[in-house]
Length: 154
Image (cartoon, rainbow, N blue to C red; front, side, top):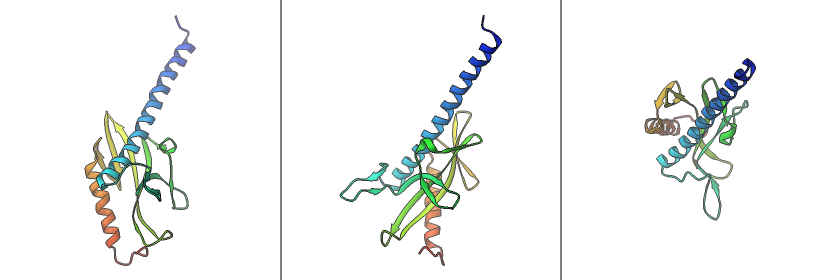
């Protein structure tokens, strides 16, 4: 018969393994959202577009740093907050030169509620694991920001 401390250690070990599996699963779902969004847009989900001049994929995953700038990140480094993984997607849609990139950044979160994936964006929740409604919303927002009169990035 195990001692109470052995029981506690065993319980802790099992809880830790379940917790690690939960976060690993959410990080994989965040990467899947990036890849599926790239496919939704009609581009490859590879990190770089193949060709003589390899360019980053127009859909990158990362986070917005304290200075307000997007920083690409590996899925392993995405931050957990509460019961969700917080991340940003950067959608690059054009440029008139290397110093003049046009893009939109979307701050998202993904969680697993009772075996159902849920992505959150701008206070709205989308059920997954297929997030077509989310992708449509992101494209609509991007179109609206491109069309915005007085946008200093235009």
